[in-house]
Image (cartoon, rainbow, N blue to C red; front, side):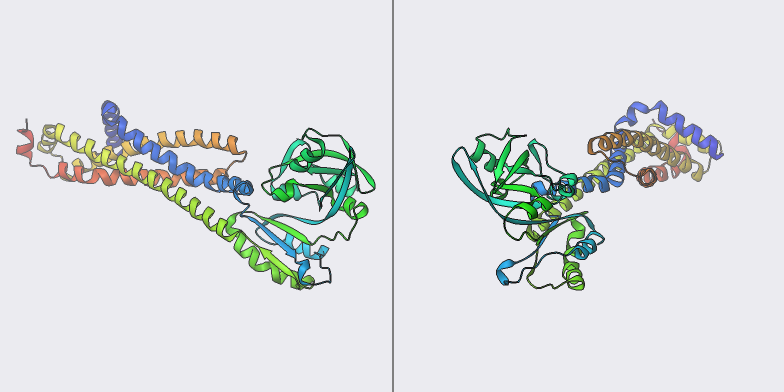
Length: 391
């Protein structure tokens, strides 16, 4: 039998017995869809997850600072050191900060608080947002504007509310406009602080406010270890490393990576189980097909069909069954991928999708043909007389 005739007959058999095959097709289709989305979307999902790791401890943020308690000589991060950090592989963005003390009078009451000087990238690196109002940006830093952002607790202490956008507050000897109240803070010290543009704070807040704290946000948690290991050498290449301290949430990082590994493992396990169930289903329906078509097999052999012809027919039916399921799964996987891309706001490369599609298709077909091998072999080895007399 020619290949095109063989495939035409096999497709016809699959269509004719579609109700029998519907459960098997759905099982393999779901496995293909799940595998396809794991391959295509895992990088984007992981990247999106890393964007928000501050919510569970900021494990991809490295804190680097000079410990003032170890020496009377002040140390801070020079511009060339910061530039070297910015070009370090694995670093997404960085910010420098420093802190001093300030006070204000409001309705006859005195309030002392920590004044944190930040640059325009601080909010993004630390994953903070505005509870009310807005957070000042790069223009406030370069323009040396007299703006500030208050921590939520400090705003409540002074004003009794967090709805204070646009109010004017005298801090030390200058008037500052409150642009917003900080949200996303889990540290009570930061919630009781005020935040100023770095340049403005250096001009108007008392004390030597030198950028002695630096935060590096890594692209993924896999980059944290290698970036942390390279920090001392980079600092030493551009300035004195005395008093340097590097802090990483190693325990939290370990727990997050372990959790992600288990989630990924369970997803792959579920997909493998779905494929396995699909393979068992193909084996069952093909065995049932061989049994119900025993007399047909006997007649074909009596008319001159050889064992390999019978085996090829049933194998091609198993192939068509798994191929149809794989194509259906590819369609479902594409729809799910589009939905996920919309939800997380990024799309995987098209070539990665087609690579995943090819792998899923080959895997599904291999499962189908492998499951149909024994029934096909059994059909091909039937005795002619026994098969014809089968009731």
